[in-house]
Image 1 (cartoon, chains in turn yellow, red):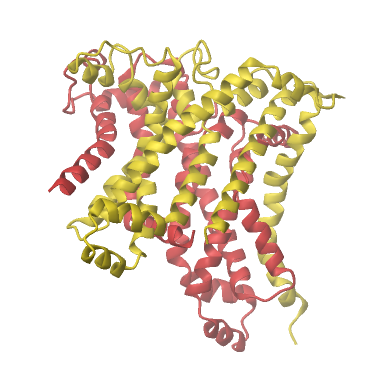
Image 2 (spheres, rainbow over the protein chains, first blue to last red):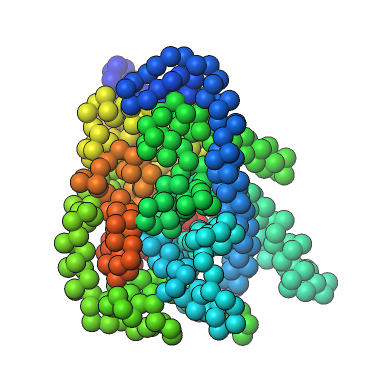
Length: 293
Length: 268
């Protein structure tokens, strides 16, 4: 006969997770929706205002600008990153000497502390002292003021993200590639298919689940991009993403409204919209993944 | 040959910014913007690090200490609670197990970061504003960790071992402590490393709930970059010092980290 505590013990083992997650994860998230339909500032909760915050938000050019910036940087950071990761993984997927060394080498970027990445690349993309302009100068290109325009600041910020995550994604692809049966390649070689052909018609279809996984992870992270652009905007205009908001992301916009303007109601409306957007993207990806099985 | 060259280029690209971080941190400000850039370390590392610790607005030393403490506590806690719950989900039978596991899976994808405004209001209520508790307590558990430990426990802990311990009269917690936890050690190490790195790199939440007089290390770095943004050698010294603990972890546990990433990928 097992004692009561013994029968309860599985619940006691899983309880800490559920209790803490409910209190500090789930509850705040759901409560965000509640705050977003109120007038709520540093003085505390005010009147219920229905969807007013959302109406204001949809009419706020700064919100649309931040959405545009976020999606632009998301594309610039995700597409080259995953493509380079694919190429890198297929290069690593063969018998090479020093494989462990190579793998550790491509992982170095994720070991760099995130604000440090921002600091280093902000210097590299400095208009006057930066190496990016130095190298462009060798090609005869005029110095670029990387902070000044949308395209240039997006490029600089996307470069940080690409640099940080390419090797990590390459290792995920590499693991998936190692599970692809070798005889598929042997048969293709016998049939005279080139390496490039094999890559596109054997490797890519076979590692599709891994590709979809990385796409959704990068999308979720990209929708919340915050640290890199904030550090890039050193000086006075950090949270607004440059003097003309040229690289302010949605997370920065939310932060600005909630923690600089202390408009918690309005900030919560932004947060809730980001959350809904991310959830939609995740669900779409989930459906695609299921169909592909 | 092409393969080797491309791989070599990839390694150089991946290592160069880190090397550049080191070079600038050892130099004086007036040569940083030179063309061609200085590519070898200089003699100023100690001086720059000294200035870093003296930089009043950054509170860098305190930031390092705060981050080390909170990352360590969060890591121990996440590993403990995740392995405990993962063990229960993988090896114990109880009503509602599958439903609860589905909830864990569902919460893994949720970007809880978007709940920071109410979370901040809660911290104000609790009086934890500008306190380290605000950084530590909400991160004590992780859905990803529970899932990872469950997957690992399923494979790594034989049922016979648990049964044998039960026959010997061990309580379930004792079984966890003496049989399961040792078997989970490799998986727990990977989870611990990722958790430590994740907590060390946390930025948005500390920036919201802490003040500059009690920062984490990433917060200190952002203070450096807003206050001293023309002083590159100072900022780079900070960036370097903030990366050293992660580098040490990486050099010591690199193989396990790689194994962890690749195993996680197979499961996904």
